[in-house]
Image (cartoon, rainbow, N blue to C red):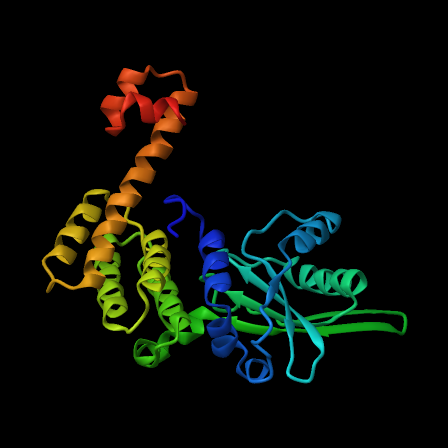
Length: 287
């Protein structure tokens, strides 16, 4: 199901982790993946993680995920996935990872596999250990990390992979490489979309992955969006391409709805809002 058109990078990461969780563990945690018993549906513990985050004094990060899984040996484990979406060094991050670990352990009493995915543009920022020592008392906590920026030499491997997260990582690399450069971003987005349509993904999966690409690879120049969809429409006609065209219609409708909400909250008349967004008065009144 297509979600809101205006999503944050945190939110689109959360969506794809839930949607493609098996492929997520296969891509980022292959050794663990082989030992997960997928006969038991993974349980996403969003509410529990929210309570832990609030208790820790942290903000609600919509990309953080806590997932309960069953292993083939019959035991339960928890996976903590923390995605750092920022462009600068954060000195509090490693302590926050450690704090999450001991609070989850205290609350749920389960083994934890922690993974931090760094999507930022600072190549040197990739801490994987919290260490504290005080008069003979010492604590050391390590966790798994994945630095997207370090994958720039693996682009061909990512393009050839059928794992959805290969396309997601490639999109994230292109996002970092095309900041403030719409022409470069346009070509990257076109390449990603064509690559998406060449894969043998299910129709609903194409929707989810294109939404990730579409939100991440947005343009500064709004005219490029129309140019992008026009070029997609000129491609050889396929059922998959029709999905992208349908996405445009739904996305633009949802974008108009968001604009209408803002105008309505600011006190604009129904007539002015209707003329601006193209929505009917009845549609506006229902918002």
